Image: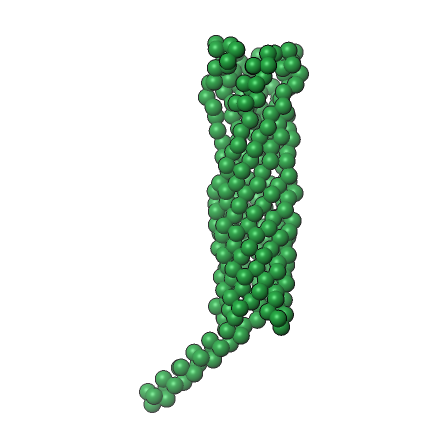
Length: 252
């Protein structure tokens, strides 16, 4: 009896393994993912208005200290839904839509920085970037090796982010500029997936996101000095980031 039971269990495991090894990636899937995002956001400053009457040394001081190269980073998690079709050649074509929540941010404050031409005058410069949400539609090209799949993916993305720049001098020159916007961009990357053979699969991915530049201007805070004649500052800020994550999918 024990011998017959052992043969039955072994046969069942062999059948399951054979089915999994010959598994087909074709079909719909839905799943979740989690990981880490880190990137770069460069801020460039342009001065106008009454700044043209100031010395070149002072203008260079403001531009040099207010320009910034931020490195937003933080957690990323979301959901995905898509469809794959596996051909007889084991090539896979697919498409996927997803929504991700990101908590990637970075900020800095220089503290009072004395100016070169006027040591008694100091400015405190601040910059920040906060990446909040992302929605993406991507195509996928993959190749299946038994239960394993490797793939490349690329598509269109929208990223919701907030950019801020501010300044306060010991002479009460106080201004702030910000923009909270949804920006279009592109996303591409590579991944690996493993099929457990029971409609569940595991994935690991690297994704690169490039978002277009944003432009915004500063405004005077209430009570600021030097309001007239007006000094103007405009900012150009870009954003790109990398995401490393793992996920699980239910295939049906």
